[in-house]
Figure 1 (cartoon, helix red, strand yellow):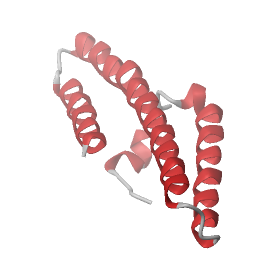
Figure 2: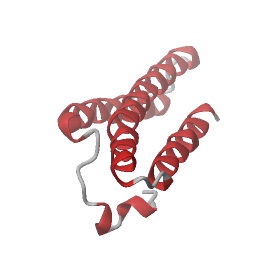
Figure 3: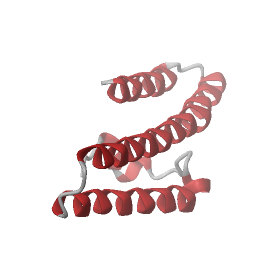
Figure 4: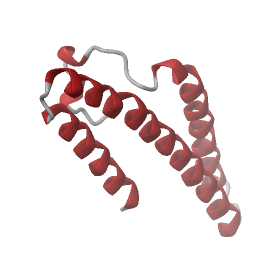
Length: 110
């Protein structure tokens, strides 16, 4: 598991995805099952194109989860930082959240 600075206790505020957490977990469990199915297909020497079709489906499903989380980050974390910035006059938090989103987008595009 990759850890980040956001894993620390001082970042204990609810995340943007918290309201949809169960839906995300359900989707991820479904993806996990798909990946196990792909491994089983390889183990059983299934046709390459059928395996590649399943890999593409998993990639698409993970992309959908990623896009949802990114949307939640922007709608909750970036907007929240902007609201706090408006009240305090300190724009550093907004810049940090925007940079996080930009970096996440960059990782998704690799």
